[in-house]
Amino acid sequence: MGSMRLRAKPDIWELRLYLGRDEKGKVKHKHVTFVGTKRAAERELARLAMEFESNPQQRNEDAMRWGDKTTFNDAIMAWKENGWQDLSPKTVRDYEGFYRRHIRDSIGRKRISSTGVFEVEAYFRSLADGGLGLSGVKHVRGILHKAARLAGKWSGGSIPNPLALADLPKPLLQTEAVRAPTLEEVKTILECAESGSDVRVAAMIRVMATTGMRRGEAAALRWSDILFDRNQMVVDEAIITAKGSLLVKSPKTRASIRTVAVDSETINALAAFQQDQASFAQTCGLSLDDDGFVFSYSPDGLVPPHPDSISHAFKKIVKQAGVASDIHLHSLRHFQATVIDPIVSERQKQARLGWSTSHMARHYTDPISDEDRKVADEVGRLLNS
Image (cartoon, rainbow, N blue to C red; front, side):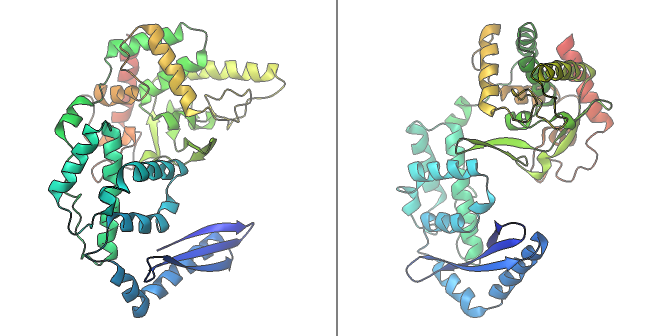
């Protein structure tokens, strides 16, 4: 129902409450300036929202807008005004692009209530026939599904969600399935990296192969996240790009914040790399920051690496190793998921990789279990055999 932002330090906040749209379809907000702590500002925003909910006149005005004439464009615009503030800048930019190119001037103009599952699936097929890949169609589906779900909620349940039962075209799913690399392919890539001169890239590939962490998570890994004495690694941040800048943020979901076990060989490789980085910083008249980014290219480690630089470095190693060109950086995550599947339970697998659904260890409380240690040691053994 609302959002808040810090207008001036230390404690001046702008509270914004979404009130719906007027008779011309223009979005209405209530803006309030609040002075106090962040927690106090959150309580005030909640109070304003409750006050609005208890006002029948305002609720009825908003409810009248939602009905049989509501289009997908209407729902997306309302979501944009009341929800996109919580998304990352990169996600907002991606959503804007998909909406403008594939939704706004086509299915976006259709009324949600009169759009059936058949029509939605035909629309997905037309996108695929037009050359949009699986990832793109999934993004479009996700935007429409969320918008229709919100329209149903904001209408008091009067607007159905035709996306709930709609499937993607099967040929698209079959042709664009991601292939997990084989153990021999990963070992070849790792050996090629370790025989080269860039110890940073070798350490990065080993970490991603043995933990399955995402590219942005690897870019955000700090020296303080590596618990050398326990053979563990904390994953609690990710690097994203926004308007040419790098931002440090929490990972994709709450379940993505996790601690994973790491094999001894990977820990030793990171310890050796840390010594090299410390020596390099010293020659530059600096010291390696304890909270610096592990794969940083700056001597003190204070500047995170660009996620694209990690992908480019991996692509270069893949080419040098002479393995199949369809292996990309994210393939290492698929490798991890595949190789540990017969070793541990599904719950432990989901917890280690940071997946988040109702069945994916959302409430997992003991990520460093005997199972996870078993995973780390076995994957390390496989890569070193």
